[in-house]
Image (cartoon, rainbow, N blue to C red):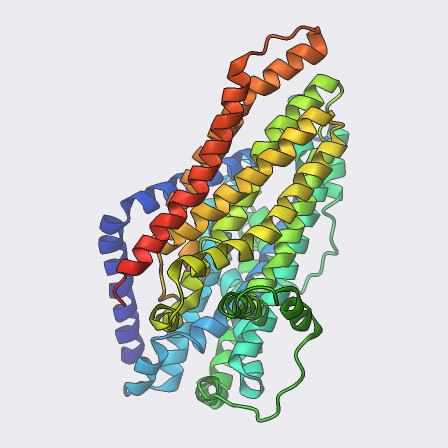
Length: 560
């Protein structure tokens, strides 16, 4: 126990120092993240308070049944998400973490190191669920006028509910890591987790939760929405115990609530003990094998896709061609990278679904929405770009010195990165805009200006992404997503939003002139229309070339 306390004290000191000194150095980043988290929590609370309060007033106990169903699906969803999250997090935290070599070299028992990593995994996997879930449970308590005991009992309900999927997920990983390579297991689990996440997002979006936001929402709409969430009620699931404990507590049935809490605690204790016993036998062996490298003398044939890409790029200079092929192969070899295309696909489907279901009746509203759609498409692209484009240079990682010390022109290196990401992004952007405008029945002028504008916006976003990613690189990371959430990444997002906003504002005058001519049959346009066009082109060129030039300059002055 004393060894575990020492490790936990060390971990708490590291966290405290990161918060204190990190907050001083990155106050801008923390302020933005805190504001976004606060707004999310408020919106989460209002949304579920509205649903639960609607259901609560339904007659004949219908509301009570539907609220029970709603809480059951919420807890079941949380249980599934926690399980997947723990499986993915456990690999990186318990087997690939950089501090494990140091901990394993200390005279600590393996079980002590394992328990400390167990707790770290559980915390890292569950904090997002807590942020999302607590406003729901508070809203439920407010609607039911629950007393203080309800809110106090949330802690003994949530704590074992988090431990159970953590234990199961870690148990699965211990078994897998004993027989399979760490990197391959991590990639497969990340891939499955992203597919699960994409499916979950699409499921909730297709339920059309926006129908609950109107002022005059009928009981039938609320009932239909909650019925769409209906899932089987299995009494042996921890999600069922947690839901029934919350419901019993809110209704003043404390004894019944304690029964379900005891189920949760006993299950959590048993799973934890079983996990520790298994870890004593397998954890160290799995960790040791995770750090061993195996090379295979047998080399298979190049995949057909790589062969086709090499033929497509054969007209380029050899250095440029090799850089392209390097980036393409690295992208598709890393499952954590290419598997996110599934989440991206879900995002595109949801975006088009939203446009398709907008209640627009008049031609004017459809054309006006087409113009606003340009800004929305730009925001979607900027979210994609900060994850893939901004991190492109940082993705070189600790091997960046090989690029830096090789006879490669830095300008060509960055422009290769530019074209690597510009081509797929422009295809995606044009598809978004064209398909959306077809759904909106936009006229030829709006379609043309949208296609041209999104081309310029994409070029600007990619140019800023590569350039600013070079100015604010981060070559030391455990997860590339950390780079996107860095101060440079947040600054890039802000600059992207400003750039998109200015483009849309400049387009407002030509579009206004067009609408006036189409609907009022009067031409009020003058030279200012062409000035707006010129400014849009100039701004896009500046957004593309200036960051790229600054990126080249920064690369030349880097000290590795």
